[in-house]
View 1 (tube, rainbow, N blue to C red):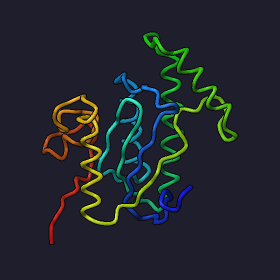
View 2: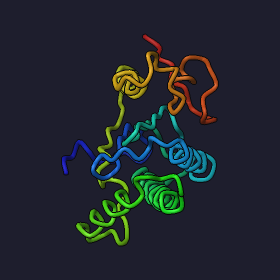
View 3: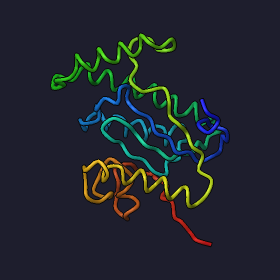
View 4: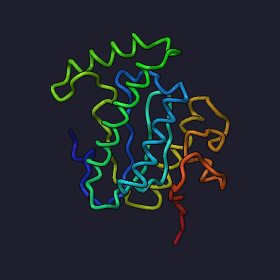
Length: 188
């Protein structure tokens, strides 16, 4: 893995993206997105995750965060991914309305069989590609990228209209996730 894609500064602000294996569109169902939101809230309240921007797309998640409780950011993100993986797979297994259940679970099993450090199911790809954000301009660029993702995908016309993101918070509205640290860019 490139040196550019590692967590080097435990106190740094990081942009990460992580995807479902095979880029499968799992998050077309709101109940699965809601499980991610609950986990983000838990990480905020109990694990010291300071969230600055986020967006849940159909098959991947974007996040700008900082670890504030002396926990390494890679461990915090790893805990989040492991926990959400188990919860979402269980929700798929138990969802009587999930028409893709057999396909999804078979795919997750096959992916787990390819990996030496995964047992039953592999839900998330192993890469997160963390990028430490070092300037106001870069932070603003990544926030804009995150918030414009649903617009680029044709889901909404304006970023703040997509409720599974922090874009409403940045537009002065109330978003789904409390405690988002809205970044304010000040030119010097």
